[in-house]
Image (cartoon, rainbow, N blue to C red; front, top):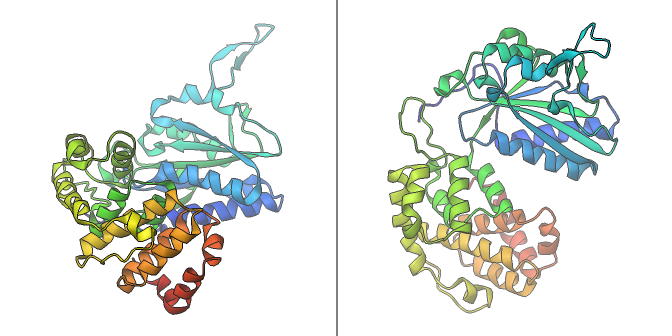
Amino acid sequence: MTDVRLTNVPSMSVGKTVSTLADAYSAVINKGLPMNTMPSVMMWGPPGVGKSQAVRQIASEITEHTGKRVEVTDVRLLLFNPIDLRGIPTSDADKKFAVWLRPQIFDMDESSDVVNILFLDEISAAPQSVQAAAYQITLDKTVGEHKLPDNCIVIAAGNRTTDRSVAYKMPKALANRLMHIEVESTFSAWREWAVKTGVNPKVIGFLSFRQDYLMKFDSGNDDTAFPTPRSWEMVSRLLNGVDDDVDKMYPLIAGIVGSGVAIELRTWDKIYDKLPSVEKIFEGEDVQVPAAPDAMYALTSSMTAYAREHMDDTDAIANSIRFADKLPPDFGVILLKDYMYLSPDYKRTLMKIPEFNRWMQTRGGLLNAVI
């Protein structure tokens, strides 16, 4: 994949982008500062990197940090023309002057216990005439006589012109009104999100073994199906919702990530037939550890999925942690990190399990290792 970067803006993973912006917005809200303390944000990145997902996560974390309900208004500027942003003209009551009917995007809850996020997605795909109409929204949160409420955050996102997607060069006057962040894909941040949200364990296990397949977008390649964090989420929904038989789902998976990657996933999936019983591990039986790294990736992702379904069974979790002591240190770290990602407060539950505390005392120093 060609590594394209913007030259003078910070580059952060999706997770880092979410935590940085959510913390900043939450600080503004909790201190009672005006929303315009934070400039409007522009997130740049290749297709499928997770920009839209990041906005939803930011909303969730703001709620967690402030206790306020966050409403996201998702506007695809590619589908708008300039008049759509200002509203439809009509005559006033005396039929002397033109007035503009307010567009629906300005219909937001102004309550003090609510935070609104106006998400201007695909802004770089909008023609420059539409981008120009967004000037006032990003800086003054107004268009003509219409004004966004004071409790509104504006976040924009789009692809770079170098991505060979539909993208127009952003006018300098608009660019100067925004705080720019380039969103990049890192496996460790994606895995943490994937575990938290219940991505299919086969997808997590395969990508743990082949991390280079998380993001294979190449602006110089004409393939229409290729792997990205977004496309792997689609694969996960198929396996979780339709059928987790990769061989049976192969034609559909190939249509999402491409036939080459789908073939490798189908070949790798045969490992699951040779794995030890996860149920027996959690029941405390003596189970042999597989030797091959690809099998251990598959096993740890399967154990995490099983732990998600039995989070309240601390005896079973304790048995699995005892089994983790038999794993090579790197894989034990992967497993225990995943356990801590299962829910925001689950580490507190783990701290009450003696086996977890013993593991932390003997191997906890390895937690900062790179997965």
